[in-house]
Amino acid sequence: TVQRLQPFASTIFAEMTALAVRHDAINLGQGFPDTDGPASMLDTARQAIADGLNQYPPGPGMPVLRQAVAADRLARYGLDHDPDSEVLVTVGATEAISAAILGLVEPGEEVVLIEPYYDSYAASVALAGAVRRSVPLARSGTRFVVDLDALRAAITPKTRMLVINTPHNPTGTVFTPDEIAAVAELACEHDLLVLSDEVYEHLVFDGRTHTALATLPGMYERTVSVSSAAKTFNVTGWKIGWACGPAELIDAVRTAKQYMSFVGGGPFQPAVAHALSHEQQWVKELRDSLQAKRDVLYDALVASGLEVHSGGGTYYLCADITAIGERDGIDFCRTLPERIGVAAVPVSVFTDHPQPWNPLVRFAFCKQDHVLEEAARRLRTLG
Ligand code: PMP
Ligand code: GLN
Image (tube, rainbow, N blue to C red; front, side):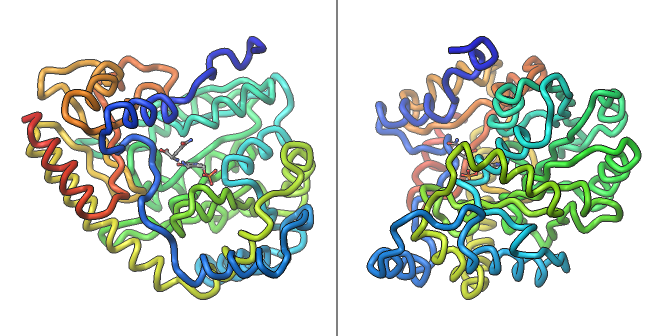
């Protein structure tokens, strides 16, 4: 393995999922749902295969999906993307993220990440030969907040891009409109590109709303917005994602993407297009059911004696294990599957400054009620 990729040799999701399988534990580690997406979407995919849509789709993605993505963003955010030049279909959000960094950041330029961060950001920065600067989230009670002063201090003349993710994995935080506006102002002030990872855009709870970064003043022209069908329609294995933004930026993302996968997921593309156009009610029900699952997990974690951080979105909750006499989330997660039959992931692996994050552990709650109830019962035995 080349030197710049050596720190990324294995992902925590692979490690913890393997442990869960070995101990037959309930896997609340890797975030994936255990039920299918809308039936009409699955039918559309089956039909697409039967109809012979099994060869290379067009490079930027099938027009029907690009049009559906553009229509969806117009309806929900008032953002008017040209489906031909401003929407690119990718192999999951993962490829959109890598291709955006590879296509827009020169080797040696800096990318600012907010930590803890989704693991593919740092690896993608390394792939590009760029340099990452990580700024930790601050805490306000049990809420995580953007530390604007630290963010400002991390920006140098070499900074090219800022990556922001809301709703936030792994903490579950939905940043407030004020926080997002402040980040946007900073990006404008320093003329930065912004990669906005909004894969959990629909999964916001308790009446919160998602703020799409590109809607803020001065942001459309500098933002690549990324989302995916994985979290919205329970199809993490389909790997259908997209990047949206001004034509000039999307062109750069497309240039890199061409040589990563060229294209992907042919028959799934019309299915996701169908779901975006016809299954918004299903998505609302998914969100409501996830909010109820969040409450079940929250109560179990509190009952087990952990200090739980308030989660406003995504399908994750973070808890601090200090209160039950534990210190190290990595050790805790390595033993938890065998100990009580539940898997989780440590948060410190998503950071460059692990020390303050060591006692934090992330639990996913995107599981069927009976599975989650059983996990909750097992977690309560910790207390
Ligand atoms: N960004 C975040 C914040 C995620 O949680 C995930 C999925 N785990 C991705 C990107 C990748 O999405 P996809 O599965 O569509 O590649
Ligand atoms: N996005 C999911 C998570 O954060 C899965 C990631 C993965 O397996 N690479 O858990």
